[in-house]
Image (cartoon, rainbow, N blue to C red; front, side, top):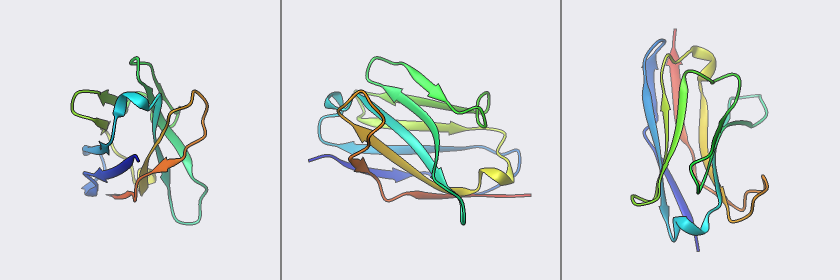
Amino acid sequence: QVQLVESGGGLVQAGGSLRLSCAVSGNIFSLNLMAWYRQAPGKERELVATADKNGGTYSAVSVKGRFTVSRDNIQNTLYLQMNSLKPEDTAMYYCAATRESIFSWPYWGQGTQVTVSS
């Protein structure tokens, strides 16, 4: 059974940085795709970034150039480095994972809150 635990959220001023971590219990090598999603109050959940087990990554247009996703298969951890944060980045950030090659996520973490003040 795979469990995902996020950490690293918090309150930061606009322009600041945070690094989110998603610790995986279980075999991370069995997880073909991992992702970061976010959901702000009153808004739909949004895909932020993905990382596959071979090192391929994707970032949404809204965060490209500011956020970097990375995956450490030795440390069993997915990261999201967030720089130049904006108030509109305020949301609950969730880690998700799948053994498949499609965006269908059976495994989710509990989320970590990121709040960016202006």
